[in-house]
Length: 314
Image 1 (cartoon, rainbow, N blue to C red):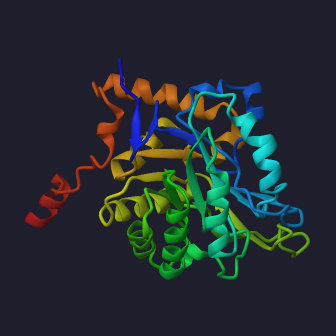
Image 2 (image 1 turned 135 degrees about the horizontal axis):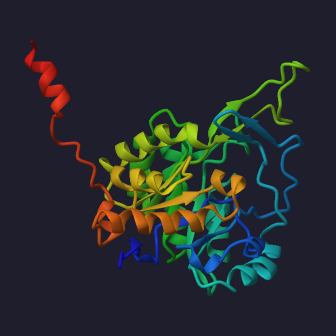
């Protein structure tokens, strides 16, 4: 019997798989057993009602998809009154994702959503479709630190900080988040991208640019998880292009303690449950008793036979 349980600091999960923010809702109970998930994660909420970006909001590409949803929502009051009770019908621990354009409002929102039933907060300082022109706090170490510092003072809940792959030096941003009080890091959000319709010569998205997700981004985000894991001591949640159990294994070997699945759920709404089942089978076949033992277990401290042979010459 494989032990799939993992811990992200004090936050406990029965398995390492959870949805990425914005790719999941309680309505998915119609096609999957939500109680199988390691955790549930809300769509990112803002204080006020947001209409989101103009359509079209999604464009398919050969290796994934680009979205420019723009974080639409009905605001924090509606969320507290109507949506939290809906999530709490299920047994996995609930993580609430919040965002703002003001440091102090991040802290105020964190305080307001620290309510019974909420087990952790994800601080989304990195959404590229909200401000693609550089206004995301996760692009700047000092802005990241200020947000995390204020949120840390506002709540006792674990804080997971969602970083941006669009940052010039994501390792420095990760360190800033850790030093300011983050309990874990979500690595990472979508990669700023674009598609142009060759028939109309116009951008395929109403917002012109959006965030790319899907299998093509996995090697890029995996590299970031690996680099960040060498630079910080807090847990990492890997997010980007996971469509099968082996992807989870790769992220954990690179240093992640858990993962988030997004794109795969659009392609197959039951993907997360399949990934959990396949992960257990993968571990069982290899005699791996605890999935948590995979975290950071990449064998990167020795030369491979190929390198040794190449160095020896003919």
